[in-house]
Length: 286
Image (cartoon, rainbow, N blue to C red; front, side, top):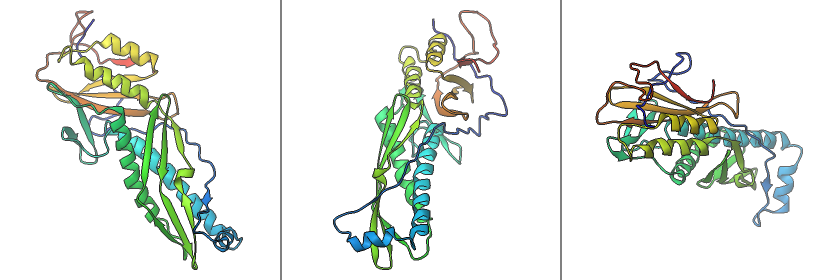
C-alpha cells in the first residue's frame, strides 16, 4: 500500500536541518608500508635508506604517508555521504555554504547518480585531498616528488575498497627511492552498497507515483538491511531523505539527498486514516 511521505522523529542533539553532520563508520586496518626497488635504484640507494642513521626519519615518513592515506579515504567516504554521492556540486543541489545536498528527484526529474559514478566521485575526492595532505609533510633534507594520483574505488556488499596508484620519489643527499601507495590497498567495513539500493528504490518509486511512496515497503527493506530511513520536510515542497546505520561501528554513517515535489498536501498515513501524525522513523529499532 502506498502512503504519504512522513517526517523523521529527530533528536535535536543528533541532527539539525541546516547543519547535517555524517561521521563515517569504518573499521580501518592498515598494515606495513613497502618501499619498492625499481630498476633505476642502485643497491647503494637501497642501502642508504635502510641504514640505521636515517631510520627514524624514514619511520616518521612512513607513518605520515600511511596517515594521509587513511585520513583521506575516511574523509572522502564521510563527505560523499553528506553530499549524496557527489564530490563536486551537481547542477541541482541545495547549497549550505560549507557543503551541499543534491536532489535525486526534482519535480519529475530523476537525478540520482549510479554506483559507478559514485565510485568515481569518491576517487576524485581522494585524488584531490591526498596531494594536499602529502604537501604538508615536512622532514629535514628529505624531498618528496610524486605523480598525479589515480584512485580506484570499489563499492561492494559490506565494504568499500581503495587502491591509490601514486608513486612517490623520496630523495636525500643525492639518494632516492620509490614509495608505492598501490602496495597498500585500503578496505573499510561499510553499508554504502545497501544504502544506495534503498536510495534507488525511494527515487524510482516516484516513477509510479510522483507524490507518494510505499512507507511499509521502505520500512521492511530498511529493517532487512539494518538501516534507518528518515524523512524531514525542510520546506513545503522539499523533503530531506537520510539513510543511516550504526551497526559496523560505534559512530553513525549517514547518506543524504533531497526530493522536491510539484505540490504537497498535509502528511497522512492512508492505512490509518489519521492526520496530522507524529513524526515517524523507518527501520530497525533504535
